[in-house]
Amino acid sequence: MENQNLNEPSKEQDPVNPVDEHVFKEETSAEFTEDTIRDDRDQARDENRDEVNNVYGWIAIALSAISFFFIPILFAGAGIILGFIARNREAQILGNTAIVIGILSIITRLFIMPLI
Image 1 (spheres, one colour):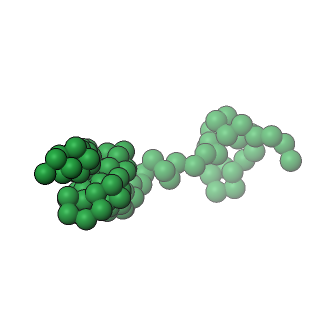
Image 2: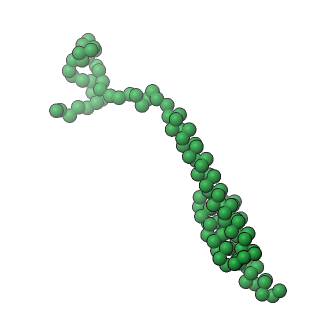
Image 3: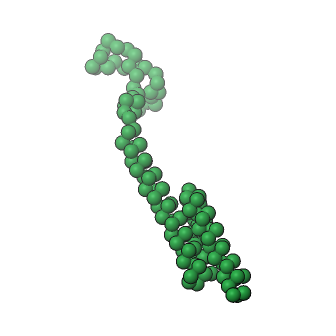
C-alpha cells in the first residue's frame, strides 16, 4: 500500500463521482460538531471541585476553633495543615482563616494560659 498524502487530490477515479477529479480524502466531521455536552460536564465537575475545596476549608476552621477548648497543639496543628491544603486548593479565605485561628490558639495556650 502506498503512502498517501491526505491533502493532495486523489489520482484514482471515484466510482461515485467519476467526473470530479479533485476529491480530497480527509475527515471534516470535527468541524461540524459542537462540544456543548463536554462543556456542561466540565462545568459540573468544576462546581463539585469548588464544593470539595470549601469543605476542606470549613473542616480546617472547625479544627482550629475546637483547639481553643481541647488539646490545642493537636487540633490547632491539624487545622493549620488543613488550612494550607485548602489554600492550595483555591479556598484562600477559608484556608487563611483556619491558619490564623490555629496560630492564635497555640499562642494563647503556650504564652497566655500559663500566666492565668
